[in-house]
Length: 375
Ligand SMILES: Cc1ncc(COP(=O)(O)O)c(C=O)c1O
Image 1 (cartoon, helix red, strand yellow):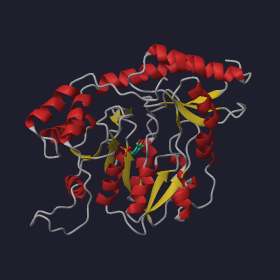
Image 2 (image 1 turned 90 degrees about the horizontal axis):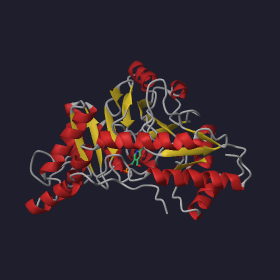
Image 3 (image 1 turned 120 degrees about the vertical axis):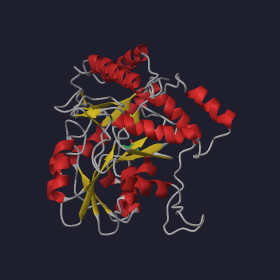
Image 4 (image 1 turned 90 degrees about the vertical axis):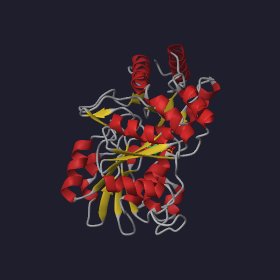
């Protein structure tokens, strides 16, 4: 089986982990946490980094740190992971879902303005699958209307939009270091900001809001979302490899596209837009409507052929839990609905060899040929 993801841990990861064990520093108090925060923030050009236990935790902390709450609306892509929406809902705010752009699969920035009203407080763009969102018009809208921007850059480590690092935009940005991310700590995340007061608030929220007064006396509620020294040790080692990882992902994207780019049966995310180059965090494909298979069936058949895949996101406005809670307005978002039903991604791990990519392409072509589709 060619796995859908496999990390590369061939740098200083073991050595730094050994150091944690040798010194006995395992918890969040260890020195690697602060080092990882400093080095990751510097890489993205932000003043402050607050390491947390996951990308989901980072979103919770970001939304809470900005003081979003009941009565506030947050504009968010419908085609994303539920972590974005869960953070908004847990704060008591209301998510407003925007459909995807058919070409980039990112939030359709042109659809934001009509949704703004006096309750709108923030926009949460998500760089989907390694292709940066068109941030400039979004930031202009946010500036004109006094809105916060929470940039979810979980899938955009080391990428750039108009020459500026993804994760450097808006009031606050969030990252995930889950095992399939470019920089991984196994589980982990980070909040970045340039605002010292927001950073301080994030630090407090991730650590149960222990105040500066007597320990165990709390003025507010927070979470234990701390990152351990073990995780951060891996993160410091991984971050040193980020440029290499980006090159590997782009080479993977190029090799897949050389084989699959000309197939009329599938559409791909663009290799570049006017403002950004795709980092191919994952390599997604969308089956054209004339292909007599949906994504679920294609994935099942590829698994039989030894190819690991993952489905695309399922739109937030179609989520059973959000419908039950009354946060789905019943309106269609046709682009995301189609992406969810026709799209999936192919093996995309950093450990993937060129021969494996070729095997994946052979199997995709053979599957299509089974249905009489010329490749
Ligand atoms: C865009 C995006 N945001 C948030 C998350 C949540 O991160 P985590 O899995 O670390 O909680 C992910 C995870 O895959 C993601 O892709």
